[in-house]
Length: 482
Image (tube, rainbow, N blue to C red):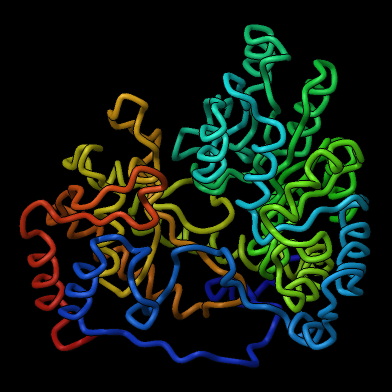
């Protein structure tokens, strides 16, 4: 329930927690920020944390744990086999999802590896509302292909559609008919969709997709890594969820899916991952890969203290006061940026605020990576580390040509319970300054381009001296301010 202010002009999101541990931050002068982004090869992933003021790269593994999570880490059972920590995590998963068959993994992409190894054969297709970078890489590594079936509204940056991550149901049926069920490894539902602005998927849409899968004998798999924000949006925006508890929604979803997997670095605010299923046969088929790739079946590569924190964090996911803070802070950022004229993805989704680099920098062709260029400009302007979510995050086509992304976005992730409102206001201010000086920003070109997942550790160079000119303009506008 929203807390209303007596003076409506003071209305801001309210944090339903207090801060008990703090970490000192550092804001370098603009000249040093310019030098640091060049040292990092113009890749925000390669910046050192000591050189970053606001780390908005991701919400994966950087959310603040609760006091109860930290306390639970003290009772961890270090036993290699038969660990009580594992039993407590299984109990939490059963309570939250209503599912007891469980396989541990060290994080979400490890789960993706197990799923691809087990179920994807060369020449098969995986249908999904939208791809995620590592998911697609694992599928193509096994000889499979990805087909995206998000509805047309999902690729419209500015709209009021409440569930832009929804599958196009009619197109899904058509593709299944054209390809034949035997040629489809599985259908993957991502709730919510990372690469198109953290946009949620409705419960109704997911239930319909699961039904189509069952009718055609195709496995349905839910990627629940971003489910926490998605649960909030279903509860707030979807009529059928208004009288359901968060646990009711979780059980309903897990009950119709063949497999659910997630990264606990996002869902549960811990370190680790899990694959769960009602179907014991699926679990048995995947089971042998856990000791091979991850670790024994009671820990799967996870550190046991993280497993205790995950058990508590999953239960806290059922609390609306916990899961609302992220979406409310993101909504605040989107409203303020939109009010300032900055093109953003609307409506506000989960994960973070997404800035529309293609609209801000129409003078930069996609071959010069406008979203990546904008991310470097934001770091120079404010020490804010965001993430490129555009062409740089794609894989090249098999013939080596560039696959241009449907959207060119800069994601400013909002880790949960980490930033204060004044810090968000600072970020909004610096984004506005970059937007007002957007004509100074130029493109990037490759210096060192890895073959796989290039956005993680590739290095780029600016085309021309635009970064120096941007830093000079900052100093002219802000004087001796940091």
